[in-house]
Image 1 (cartoon, rainbow, N blue to C red):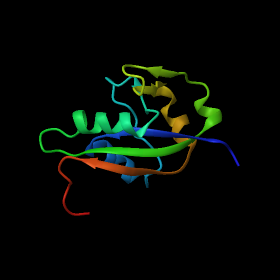
Image 2 (image 1 turned 90 degrees about the horizontal axis):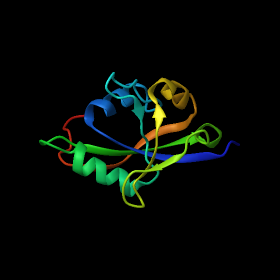
Image 3 (image 1 turned 180 degrees about the horizontal axis):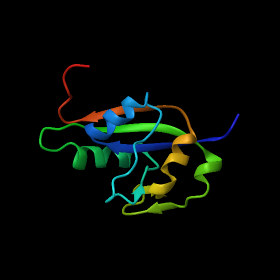
Image 4 (image 1 turned 180 degrees about the vertical axis):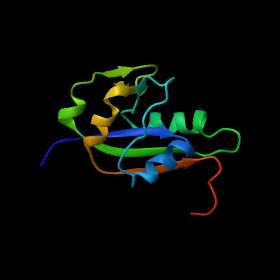
Length: 120
C-alpha cells in the first residue's frame, strides 16, 4: 500500500460545494487570481484560517482533511509562512489535477466555524 500524507485545507462554502459535487474526491480548478493551491500541514493552522478568514459576514468556514500519495507530495517543500505551525505546501494551479489524481479516499469536513448552512 502506498504511503500517504495527510493534508488540511481551510475553505468556504462555494469551494466546498464544488468539492461535494465531485463526490468529495477532487478540488476545483483555481481561479485566474489563484496561482497556487495551498493545503496546510496541520489542523490547528487550517482552523485558524477557516475561523478568521473563511467564516465572515455570517458565512461558515470549514476545515477539510484528505490524504495524498506521499510520492506525489514529496516534490513540494513545506513552506513556513508565519508561526512555527503556519506551514503549507504550494502546489502550482497547473498541477492541481495531478494532485487530485493522487488523493486517496475522500475529502472530509472535520470542523465548521461560523453559521452552519441550513438544509442538506
